[in-house]
Image (cartoon, rainbow, N blue to C red; front, top):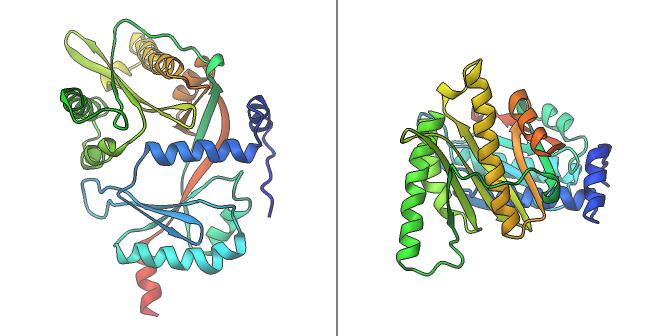
Length: 304
């Protein structure tokens, strides 16, 4: 089955880089796989079966499968789904499928027929590095981490210490403490070059973000602004300013380190963030969704 690419923006951007739409999508998906390391990865029938680091709270360990080879609908239903749902049931996890429509035409109908439920929709945004606003801001503090090239020395120890401090800063700014175990375990496992940035006001961190270099591109992650800077009026304008400074500084770092494209992922319903990235030069490249089959369904099936 040949993937179908109806989106004009995807065709246009892939042509700029002289690659097929499928190649561009697979490159970005590979970047995301490397930028968000899993606790465990298995391969079943051409799919990557990932088990994420657990967060706080009951049954919060997540498991996601993604296509590692060209998608085949018949094989997916007959071989992949039974194999991975059994694996995740044994780990006491729901099964989550990441659906990238350009690579997997028609899979949503198959998932619905297999008792999966729609969970959420996100967008991948993209730009050539020459088309984005990439300017380092003097009031943004940045440090790099390069695990592949840093020897076991004082520099490595200092980078690891700064990473630990940045993780705690991100947790405080985002006020999302339930992901603390996940981030503390996941970020040190990233092997690609990384940049971490923070903006402070009166000695207090108010915004932060991350960039990761991979596949000749730079990905933006964890862009977060303190809640009391997200209110209406001047607060809303300040949030745009802070988000722009963080993103622009990370893009400048990526450009200086040889990236020729930039990408990020944003919740489809987050209109303000999408507009901010559009102003920086990003375009919506393709959507992706997550579909979940509850562990309780597996228990009911086993009881039959």
